[in-house]
Each structure stands twice: as C-alpha cells, then as structure tokens.
Image (cartoon, rainbow, N blue to C red; front, side, top):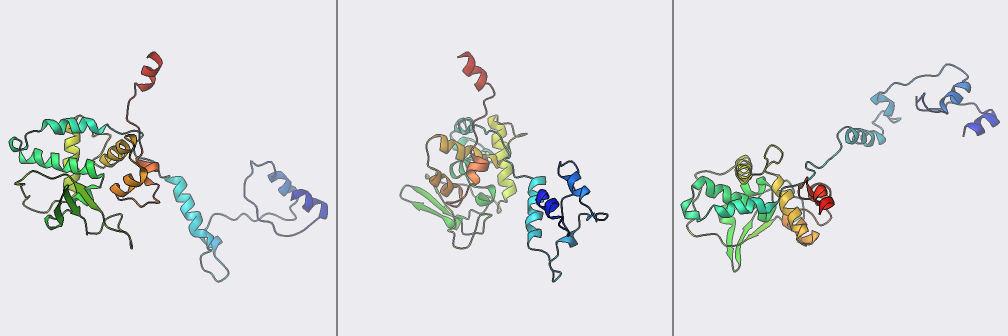
Length: 251
C-alpha cells in the first residue's frame, strides 16, 4: 500500500495505529504533509454518525475484558474419588454414627454420584423424592444456574436409601451443603486449602470419563447441555500424581 501511495503521489487522510516500533512507521512520517493529529483512547471515538455507540464497541470491550481476565480452569488436576469413598465406607454402620457424620456422608455421596452443584442438592424437597423400582428419583423443579427455556429440569437417580431417615429441623442452604462436603473431603485427607466443595464435580465427572462413560451421559448427568464444552474445558482433569513422571523413568 505504501509503494502505491508514493508512486501515485496520493493525498488524503490516513488513520494508522500509533505504533512507533513498527518498521513501516517512519515511512508514514516521511509522507506527512502537516503535523499529525494524535487521537487518544476515548469512548466517543467509536460513535456512529447519529451519535449512537458504534456496533464494534461492545465487541472491543468484550475482547479487552477477556484478555485481562481470561477464563482459565480452576484446577490443573483433581483428587481421586476412591479416597473419599474409602473414608465414607469406614463410617458404618449408619446407626452407630452421629447425625452430623451421617449428614456429611449422605451429602458427599449425593454430590459424587450426581456430579451436581451444592445449589442443586440444597433445593431437594421431600415431596420431590419418588421411590422407583430400582432406587430413588429426585426431581428438581426449582430454578437452577443452568435452567433455560425449553430445557428439562434435572432428575437425580440414586439407589435406595436406608429406612427411618432423620429429617433436618429447617431448610438447608447451599452454603451448608458446601461446608458439609468440604468437611468430609478434609476428613478423607483431601487438601481443602486447594480443593473446594465444588471440586466434587471435577472429580466425579473426570472419574466417569476415565472409566469409559460417554461424554453424552456425563453431560446429561451433570446438567450440561448436549453442545456444552464446559466439561472438556474446565472439568476433565487428570489425577494428581506428582511422582508419575519419575516413576515412569525408573520403572
């Protein structure tokens, strides 16, 4: 383009980036007919003729925010669910453990076998728990983080529970559910300074994939849409084993 301008001795107004480090910048300076006008960054520069925001402005804003705060996975790896399941298996028989421990055990098992958020578990209502032939179905009609128009609300399928369950004195909050799960992880030996209660979704879904469960079943169980890339981007994590590389070299 510069060669064409020089050859034709063209004149006009040209808008270029103020980028002095580029090799083409001195050439533009040599072509100046008058002092350049430096336009500083300003929202008003992106106004259309009718003084309304230019259509490109929201796109530039979103790109800038994405560059400043890129979406990154929270964890590089995840804990092995068998560690927690081994601890929960030691809390037996149920009749001999405290109501607190029984609550931790139940909530953590629900979180692992359903891979749902604490918000979902906190919205379980007794009237929405239905016994079926092969276990229990729990319907969640309340609005969730993933609720959308024309999308079915999740149903949780579980094996049958023991008889004579104890009912809490008041409705439980999602914060309480998260606290119970985190307490159970800590008792199991999981580092809760690194992993939050929500990491159960990472652990459960990653474990299911390692065991050969299809992505469609994982998405459906965890409440993601069929087209969702959330699992692949944020949840599909390997088990943490810092000694794996060294062991592979020495074995």
